[in-house]
Image (cartoon, rainbow, N blue to C red; front, side, top):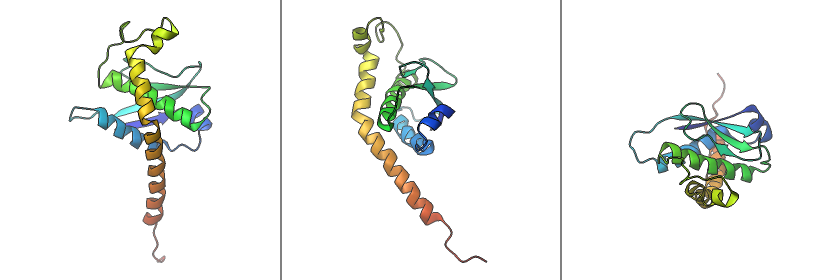
Length: 157
């Protein structure tokens, strides 16, 4: 199970995002990528970065954090950045991709863009962004429907 825990700045910047529903979506993504029968639970902290870039701290066993650029302004761009950084988390925790000069080279912009882990994360983001947003929105809509249906409709005693 993935539990997304946003920091205060992120909650203030995107107040309409339901992080409980989003956690369910990302739990599904994790389960889809995980090949072992035994699943782990992860608390993933989402923070606003002080820099211009979004990033994930590779091989960070405790306090897993995904950083979203402070320049992220729209909800769609937020979802894209989160999905991209989540893929790096999957590369690290499930696929055990070692972060080396061969898999990740940030000496120049071209070498960074040609790094296998970046190519994979961009492709993952591109293929799943619309599906993740649609699943998140449908889940929120169903959550509201279930909340209405679940409310007590009997007469008070």
